[in-house]
Image (cartoon, rainbow, N blue to C red):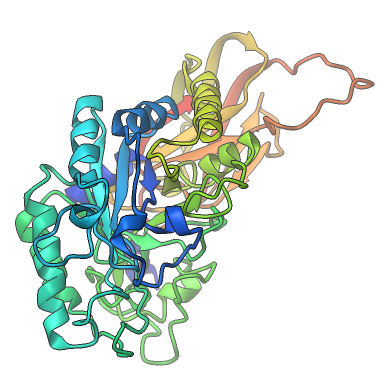
Length: 451
């Protein structure tokens, strides 16, 4: 397996995937007739008249998103109910026949440009309104709508698809022409990444939960759309590669050994700021602690974080959500605003696949909370294990598995209550050592930061 591990170490992302990783966090905006009916999945039979925002203000959305430190917006241009937030020429079930009579997609896209946010959209393949659903003609219909969104709203950074496939109004199910959809995106928006396609995969849940070891290099069996970059593993054909998208260990040595080949397919962590994906007045936003911990285990664990914030019936973000987003952004800026300076030396004699880096501070300091590591993933993801020690001590203060694009190592719990009976004297730290304990090839770290 050593040769295959080295091959795995050289599986590389596209430039689009690197740009997506650098975005790190972005907002999902779920807005549709469901906002007014109280449903999460609409039936497709809702009258257009139900969609009636009276104070739509996409600049308010952008201001709140930016306050949270997010760098993009993904708007649900069409959910499963088939209602289009833009005046599509291919259906009457859209904003053009609602009391609003505007173009939510355009207003959101232009607000993002004004606010220097990236803009993307979610177009549901499942359509519970279209009578064409379940026939070959529906793929033409879907591509026509996809073309409208790809050509009329400027630069698109993200096209978000899901795999939901239920019955249409005629009782039929659809066979989606995914390759045709992807070709359209690649041709019309060559810099966009595709979720649930060849670029980004679902993490396997909608609760903001990440794996202990989140690999971007995974078996091609995870997705039929993966771009295979290696030959088969040493045990391919001798057993099954268990690589379902929600499995915990899909990138481990044990799984990749049975694979037909590996692909670079990183994970997105998605969750809503409140229980539902659409706005429900009785719901409250999740706690600041939950949002921050999800950031640590998504952006801080080799993934990106897609946080849904649903507008109200007026077309504004709920003031409770806006306040929580600002709290969250303020906490991120406080915790990761200014790195602590240090000098760094590679420990002499440490091997290429197990290098050690010693960080020296100008004087002993208290209050060190985080070490943030990053591999140069443009060269591949390689680190399988590492440990961090303080002041030359032999035991680890932190042990981790993968690093990838970014690994945030919390040396202490930012939400843990201190015991008032204990000594409150902060430990003074004069040095930290980052030791790589296992890797698939020579380790190439891009950066080390301390906060």
